[in-house]
Image (cartoon, rainbow, N blue to C red; front, top):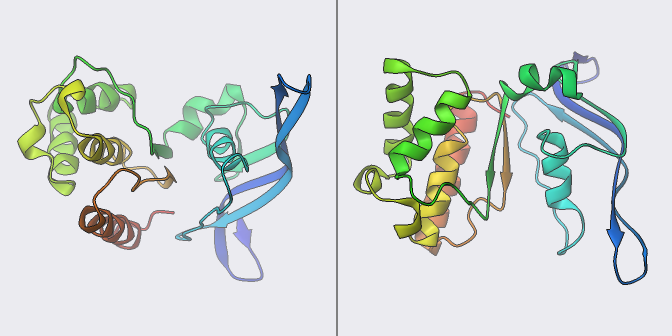
Length: 202
């Protein structure tokens, strides 16, 4: 789908997106998303800013098919993001959360292989991707370390590595540098920017 005005492909669009949660204090509802309209073009870097509770993570989780909206419509590469199309849509996307929580007893390498298999990778192709993302985020020294033995910063780098395991076209990042030291945070932002530019991701 083309944006005729700017001649860029629209890779993601949301129209009238709504999502509410029960409010236990008032016995009403909290509107996390209230008729959100959003358009993202190929290669664009879009940041969503707002205070705690503004609905940023709900927005990302809904766009990434982890939550179902109460109302509205999402399209990714022109395909409606509805449950029957999730297998197709999920091949094109991945997400890194600022609060990663992976299998505690698996090593860094085992966790990456697990997620790689979920995306259909196996054999040499799987090992190649694991080696690539491990190197990209300087995780080689931790490859055989269990997840529950990692520092919060290393867990965050694992989350970023996982988000690239399927070579996604659209990358969702929810506070990707939280818990990282300032120098590592800066390097991580540079890596992400380089990946987006060099590999033409959004």
